[in-house]
Length: 615
Image (cartoon, rainbow, N blue to C red):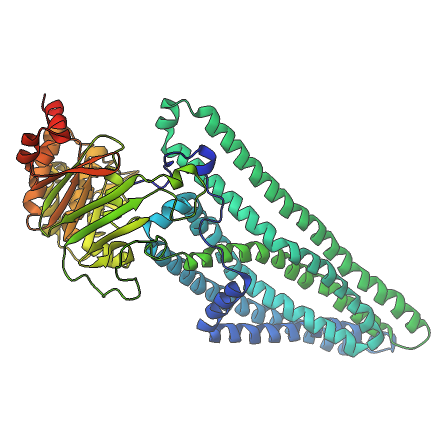
């Protein structure tokens, strides 16, 4: 099963995600999520704020004492008085350094703990998503949210939070100090607040612009992943120009969205520089006039000018991180939006038959009996697709009962709907009309974790995870001992595993053993043995094996899975020969059902397939 495949009737452009397939959290939801993260580590946040306030207070001493030194010198004060004031400046500066450093240390620890929670929550939510939701969203969107978006959030939590706290405390203390020195000079200093108007103009536009940039990045990642994964298909069908054109459009969309955010920054940052310089100029002019008239001392003018000059650094820091926080805020909305993705497929499709709703379903099915009743299905219908394919059923009124412990073979020509029916049986999709139930419970209504304990779908496309052979097997059974893992490999005929240099500790993938297609397939089948579900759906699960190995593997699996329900979708009809019953699919309909011998004797569609394959 691949998330990048194009469904029938779907163009290349239709296959591209629009960045909205997975939800994006609204601002209120994002703020609540951020507050929850802060409350979970409230002590660290309180300590960080207190340390920053103390550091900002210590930082006020330097300019004020420098002004005192100027006034002391002008009034004839001696060197000892100046030395004492200079020593106090040194002590206050050292205290500010230590307090600010410790505040940043606390802030960084808070950020690392919090981002660890964000990553863990994201992984938990991603793993809980139904496969159909992931397919509709596209792996590019899911990957972009889990990598670049989470990284952006991590950078903000780790760096922005402590930096902004330090800078905000410094800015408030500096402005307050200027007002205390002289209200008139403080009024000049408040001119720095003019940057608020530019900031409001920026903030009104930045959130949407960064969301659009994130969506464009996801779309480009999805397109590149789909093209790379299907490179051979693209080449075989001569789709190079169409895929290249689609790539150029995706790149152009990324360029436009990034140019937009760059324009917003090009307005904000120069405005911040101007807003920081003008108050200093105003204080020097007004202070010079007042000093000339004897209204204030030169030391007060110098102190106020130094305070406002120092204000430029925290102001620039706050606004710089405000710009970064807009980007990470949009990223956090996309990360948090994963929590709003649907967790069940049962609510989407309509049904003509009365069966339990997800809310009223029992915790677990009553038994292992699978019933397919009057099932219709059309790709795209469940997610509201406007593609013409969404209005054409690929399954038409299918009725079938699979008894517990039965071996059922699904056969038929390519495009008959066998794999689609297998997806419905595995709960990957839900029927448009009708019902697919296990033990009286709609399969698609089961929680994904519970569903996978009941029914496992194995296709001919498999994934080998980075790690050891043991790691790859224990995904299905975390507590399995080495003897159990080795027995599972032997059960599927994976003799190659015994020849690996480090046995179960052999690293797989880059830098280690690279399993070929047939070995990857056997590894996936070994996971099925370890998972021990009551129903296994094998969708061409041995297609990558050579016929002799496939036959050996199927017989070994039959022995291991004895007593369990096995539904085998196959083109190799020896699978049907060994099954208890054979179901024949033609053009989305179930046309024949019976034992191998009975269907051959009936001389219908299955008999024709058998003679064609057997010859």
